[in-house]
Length: 241
Image (cartoon, rainbow, N blue to C red; front, side, top):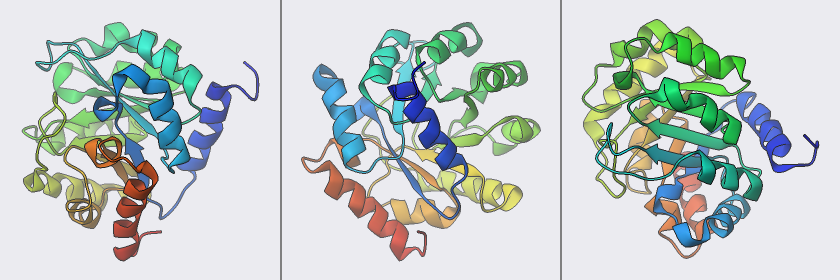
């Protein structure tokens, strides 16, 4: 692997993210992008100031929608040096984790609801050099992830029901984020996904989120840089750099 290829550059950026303090990260979700031009969309997101690229992978079983698989992740890996934040909304993440890691996932999340014991999959992701992430759906008690907090590099808290873009933000989920922040301290990565935009970002930040997945709030706008700046303006007004 060349030191200048997209994967190597993404890993360097990921190391910078891991070492960041007091910084909120923006992760545009390609679920809201134009799938006919994903390469250009990912480049525009990078140029607009995105920190990560969020990739929603659904199997039509765990959620009632079907999106993309490892081959698209592999194509995105060639198209961008943004770290790929791959979110598996699938019924058998253990079966497919290696395929997504081979394709270029830098962070790989799967749902605690999808498996009996997340531990072995989390350890496999870490052994492959990626960041293991455990996701939790709105209806799932947050204590389901407590036994695995020492195995993950990030927790993903869904602020909508997984499966479809464009849903309304569920503010009633935010106590889960507050609970995690109180438990894990100021630097741990807590990602929120669903309904994030200028009108909801302050509530998410106030609860303790520091990684924001934004779909239509970024890709639904003509000026992606302005859209990301608008989210960052909300972070600044919260006293977050």
